[in-house]
Image (cartoon, rainbow over all chains, first blue to last red; front, top):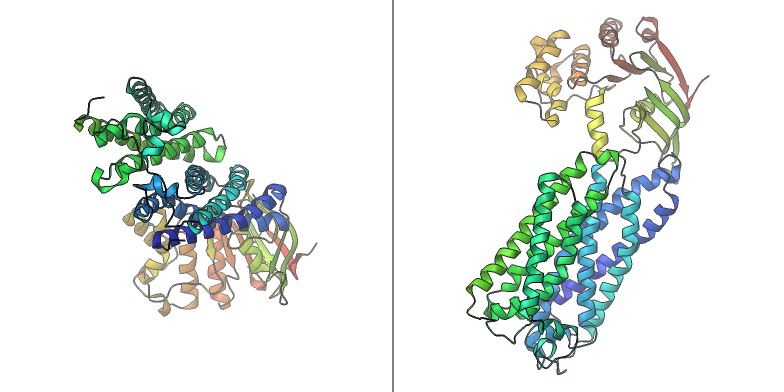
Length: 329
Length: 223
């Protein structure tokens, strides 16, 4: 184990999050079985009272867990000098078998947590808590994910050995590498760039159309969720090489470092936030509850503005990085 | 229409000092009428008024206002409902010492966001109507019992609520002042407001204000 303050903070936060969500998951199970809003039984009234407490606790826990993804990637990047062969977060994450699964669990956790927070906020806007069942069903899925996140983080940090020789990002994304990451890196720019720009343009257009006409919110969410993996793939395929000005350097993690102007911190937060907000638009547009007839569309419009602003900023940043680059692919 | 359906209120449930203040009460209160809850001290009148006005939530059962269940409302909706639909007149007046009569009356209207001048003008108008215009700048600790109760009524009316809940409005007043307060409440009833009051003061039931009397004892309604 490497005792880094961020690692300890991550472990503490993930453990508390897992504990809170495990308790909330048990409550969610109880609520879904016994929720009868038409009845005034003692049990129903007790559930109504407890749901405020549980929602507040889970909401707070999830809000705190959102930045954990960024802290985890930053920690992995900062730990690279401890491992022989590691140049960036990739080396740290590959220092044992738990690093990449932990990253994937945190990625999934980020979006599910964001979705739950949107659903919870929306539910609280209705006087009859119309989304309570959907909210707690999602919580049932979120609780195992939080437990998995915590377990993977503990397994990862406890099994880190400084004497382990790991591999640098070149082994994952370089020309000699094999696997999905290498295939992404090998995608010709002539294919990757048009696909990326088309999905990004379509997503932004759908977001703007939703803002203007208030319709096709689910289409916007669908396009944004399709665009997200394509954008990550595009970073590997051609955006990163343009920023590094090296045709064979495709690593999406080295972008987080100072020598590359912290480009990753410019690109990733708006991409993640914009995608999460667009997913929120999809969730908000789905509801037909009469008590949300006014508040629902207002929230959807606010989320759409955030999504369009974030994804627009991401598009602009990509254009500026590529435009300033001396590399010609 | 205010409806209570099998409402119970238990304090300290599951503990040694558990106490059932209201037991399985079902009740419908018609709008625009004056209804009085009559019963001895400790019979549950104040608890029942609190449940009707959303000041507390039932341990079992439902309270509905115009068909909408208000006992399950999230707190922020319940707060808004209390502010706009109910005016409360408390037994102990509950005026804030150190603030003037005018400020006390204006206080419940401040969170509504209405323009200050408009709220102030309305508060002054209410004080004039209740014969307290000359006391607007006086701090409330210097008021007599009758004046304090009239200020409390003005405060209850500042947001123009359709329902007035008055808990023992004559409890601390002599007969003359009690008649004054009851006359004010009668005027409110004549304006079409629903007035619900609790009392064990015989004077309340002698005047023509009360249209319906509900007897309560040991937390249950008497037939």
